[in-house]
Structures are given as C-alpha cells and as structure tokens.
Image 1 (cartoon, rainbow, N blue to C red):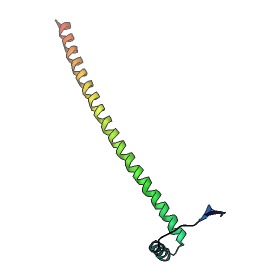
Image 2 (cartoon, one colour):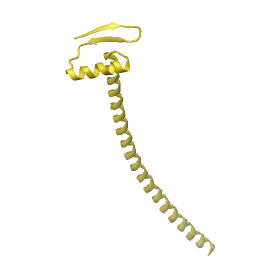
Image 3 (cartoon, rainbow, N blue to C red):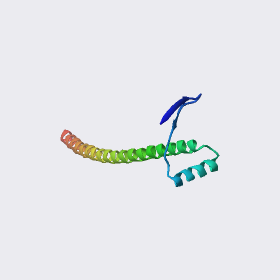
Length: 103
C-alpha cells in the first residue's frame, strides 16, 4: 500500500515493507547510529544501489570503448603502413624518372 503526499521539495509516498526481524533490527541500529529515520536509511540504500548500477554500466562502457580503441589503433597502424609503402614506391618511381630525365 502506498500513499502519496506533497512536500515542498519532492513527492513522497508511504510504503509498507515487510522485513525479517533481524533486518528490522539492523535498520533500526543504522538509523540510530546515523541519527536519521529508517526511511532515510532505505532511501540511501536505494541511492547507493543506483550508484553501483551506474558504476557497473560505466565500467562496461569503458571496456567497450577500450576494445573499440584497440580496433581503431590496429586499423590506423595498417593504414599508416600502407601509406608508408606507397610513399616508398612513389619515391622509387620518382628517382627512376629523374634518372631518365638526366640520361
């Protein structure tokens, strides 16, 4: 059951959560230690969980970017090698043409 109420900052809703006895004791201990409500501990836990998910997504994106960068670097190296070979051939042809002009 959830009931929504309007506050100045955000819309909040009241939600009933069924917890095991030990989990409820942990929740109460954390709330007392942090000097906040049990609801705030739950909200912080959700925020933390979302942060963990975002971090996992970011790590996966970074792995994909690293793989893409590796592929691009390999392609660039091949392109550079090809340009070098072509330049070398052109230099040789240029020298041959110069020799013909001199003779």
